[in-house]
Image (tube, rainbow, N blue to C red; front, side, top):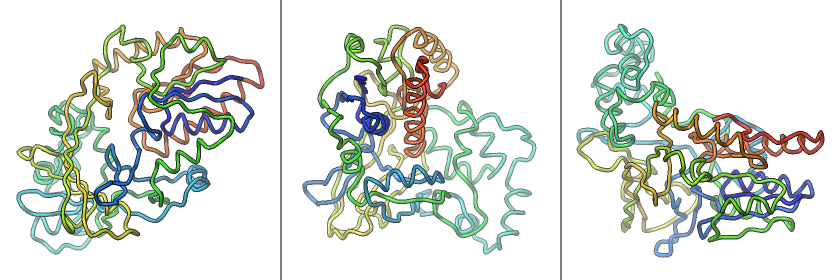
Length: 381
C-alpha cells in the first residue's frame, strides 16, 4: 500500500519505519526544514555543544520494549535530571525532597520527622478531594512550599491562576522524604549519545521511506494514498473551521557564557516577578562531552498565536468542548488516522509517543489482515 505520514517527528518516524518493514511504500511530508519534530537536536556552531533546539527532552520510561526500540537506533548514555530552583535568592533542589524541606525550613529532620511535619503542620488537611492545582499543592505540601516553588512558576507557565488549573497537572511532581533528587523515577533514563535527530534519521533510513522537508500537507493529497497518518494539529487538518484549540508556546532567548553559567542543566525560577520560567544550560545534557564555553536559553511561556509552534495543550473546559466537536468531525473522515501530541491534542512524553506509534502500526497490520477499517484515533483524545 501507499502510505502518507504527515510530520517527521517521533510518531511519523516510528509508524513509517514499522510499515516500511511490512513492505508498504511510505511517504513522509514535513513542513519544517528538519526531521525529529520538537525533539530536534543540532550542534551549536559557536560552541560545538549539542543543543535541544525546542527545549530539553530527557528520555525516561518503564517500558522495556520502548527502551530496547530506541537503543536499536542509537546508543543511550545514562543521564539523570537533577533540577534546581531559585526562590528568594536561594537555590533549592526539585522535586521537593528531604534536602529541600530541611533547607527551606532550617531544620535537620529525619525522613519520618519530615513526613510528620509536612502532613501535620504544613498540609491543609481540610481539603479532602483536591480539584485544582492550588488545592492539590496546599493539600500535600502546604502554603509555604506551594508559594515558594509552584505558584509563580505555574502562573508564568500556563498564563492563569493555579486555582483555574486541574489538580492532575501537579500529580506529575512527587514529594520525597529522602535525599533522592532525581527528577524522574523511571527504570530507564538517558540521552542519545549523538542527539535525537540522528536517532530519528536512522529510524527513517529505509529504502521504502521517502521524506520531503519544507513540504506542507493539504487535504487534497490524502486521496493519492491508501491511508494517511496525520501528526499535525487536529484543528489544522480541518483548516480551523470550528475554531482554534488553545496551546501554550515557548520563546527562547539564547546566550553564551565563557565557562559554566549555572552549574546544572535546568534552573527554575519560581517567582512570578522573574519573567522567564527557567534557564537551561545545554552542555549539561551531554555530560560525557567537555566544552569550555556554554550555551544557555531563557524560556518564556505565552499564549500560542496562529504562526507559533504549539507546545502544551491547555485542555480547559472550553478547549475540551471544542476538542469534542473536532473529534466528531474527524470520525466522519475516512482513510485518516490522527496520531501523536498534536493529532490527539494531548501532552505526551517521548516514550508514550513511541509506545502509541508502535501500537498504531500493530492496529494497522490487524486492519489490513482482516479487511477492517483503521480507526480514526488509535487513542481517543
